[in-house]
Length: 149
Image (tube, rainbow, N blue to C red; front, side):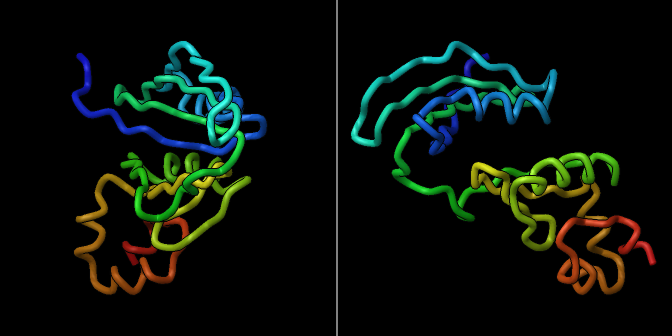
């Protein structure tokens, strides 16, 4: 099925090449990541550019890369990953923060500057526990057992 609205994510990469972005996300999302044909756009006002349609967990996106940074990624757009448990939280968190940055309350920034919220699927249930807000404010990576104390 064709998505009516497809998010477009604009990255800055060395020489505007898209392969480093595709390889990075393919490594973590594995079989849940599919990349279409790379479309070279050539020289643009932001330097050499390429684009590619990708599918992550059956959601379509367009990835655009340019050699020169035009609009840096920031906190106004993030992607939330609803994780099945602590092992899945650890998997995504550790991958994105290995070359990125930890933030707070389950937020992190990957090596390309994209913001992620790595959260358990049952976050609403966990937040109903006593002192849950205090627990979350003290965490960077979400640690589920801390809510169950």
